[in-house]
Length: 322
Ligand SMILES: *[C@@H]1O[C@H](CO)[C@@H](O)[C@H](O)[C@H]1NC(C)=O
Ligand SMILES: *[C@@H]1O[C@H](CO)[C@@H](O)[C@H](O)[C@H]1NC(C)=O
Ligand SMILES: *[C@@H]1O[C@H](CO)[C@@H](O)[C@H](O)[C@H]1NC(C)=O
Image 1 (cartoon, rainbow, N blue to C red):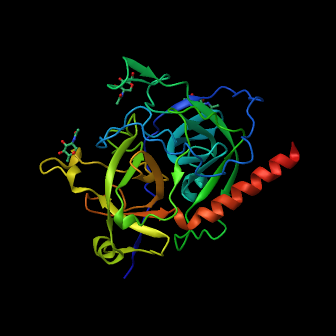
Image 2: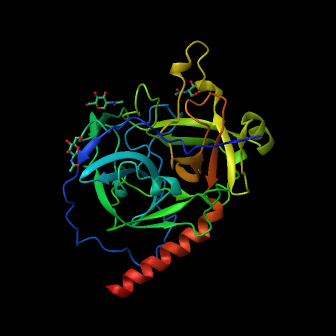
Image 3: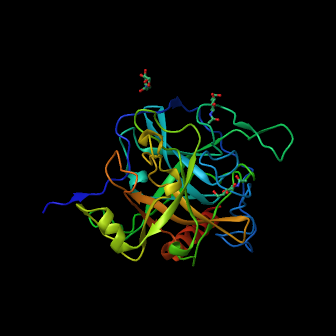
């Protein structure tokens, strides 16, 4: 039997934003923090700005680590796909998002983005006074893309890459802040939330990031739900479906669709007020996915040491050059 391969949750037809980006001036005042602070999972990582339930429409400052990718063809920059800021110089994402080339190579990382239709993001936040506005987004040129050395496109394993920025991001909480990285949570036990700009072809990608609770599925259930697909699931991947609360009994067009979610962070909460990165949305069924069809997530915990040593060696090299 010929098995279909899972796709990379890509969008084939919509160009959402075609923007020209002015040259970003180099900020020579940006320097590294003192040596004593840890490289990853620094003290203020993953600060949660909203308590209580997660609404399907994310709110301003709810995902300050969400980084949007700018693909540049002759000065025209198309923003889609995403990753997570884990360090002032690094974003983690899937390999596919870094190699995607339909709109030109990945050239910019945009941080502090919320509503992709506005230049300046503002929102009325109940707990604060009046309207709160975010600082301008930061568009930072990509310096190096570091694909995991054991990435295998055919087996669809080790689908993780680091994007090194050409200069450190300005960490401006609550607008821009690295996420904490999970090192031990078992996904089956955790609340899982995926955050991304996504949506159906007919409606286009959402203007603001959507966030949906996902439910873990055991490998055997996952295979049953994905009959007809060839599926590799090594220990570094897990399987999720959308929580049934989003299922519409009457109109399936109202149900979420994760088209566009390549590289999206899958996160959990810890210690009540922190958000931890658990995985990256890696593969899914062909569009339009049925509501019950699962998605394959790459866990980040098994790659923590790789990320840490890679980032530390880059930083050591930069320090030597200075
Ligand atoms: C949070 O979600 C629960 C369960 O869906 C619901 O009962 C509760 O009213 C919600 N709380 C708020 C503040 O919306
Ligand atoms: C950029 O895109 C616009 C609109 O699609 C097009 O008119 C223009 O020729 C493009 N510019 C370059 C340099 O490709
Ligand atoms: C995004 O900004 C546009 C333009 O200001 C506005 O019309 C739209 O309502 C905003 N979307 C959301 C979901 O806030």
